[in-house]
Length: 278
Image (cartoon, rainbow, N blue to C red; front, side, top):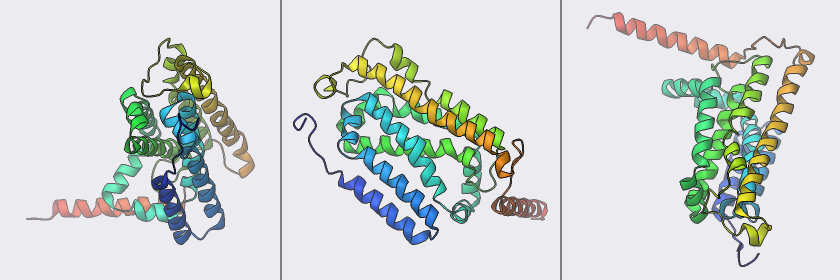
């Protein structure tokens, strides 16, 4: 294994993760949010460094699927929940940012973007690029993390002024997302040829053929996505009443009210400018 999969330090990724952790602790004072960030970054670090990260990038599609599941279903929601709503409010306050953020947090567009990004990151050219280039590998990882953010934004409701889903809507969105974002795994399960020439040494390292590795990756992606997301969806739906929230009601936060008032003021200013004589 030492010759086939040489050890790498991955200093760039380690430095980036530590820098984000230090920045978060400098800005955020809430202990729970600090813990969420620490756990999220620790999980991210474990799946991007040697050996799992290298096996996922250059050897096995199954390991790559596990890596993607951890990033999208664990790291992304933990990091989103670790950011205070006040920071989201400041970051999205500029008009262009507010417009874009509110659109990508819409369930329909978010699901489309997640599906598109997921398909791109698993395309043959991008996987092969990540297998032979550190830059390509980091680009794939970053796109996967962005996909995770887009996946959880509608259900977590972190964007002020964006459409708020009821508990029933959140549960339904998560359930549908689990079905859509793993659609490419059907191709892996039923394929009889290896689709990713950039991945190699499956037989030597894992004692499996490239085709079997590919088929196993399809099942791992399906089950690894279905089980946790369905558990989350059912928990949201059946525990909403326990938290005093009707399942069909869309709760608002004060940040949403402030953002709606800001948008009304901006519309009023545009209307005044429109009717002013030249």
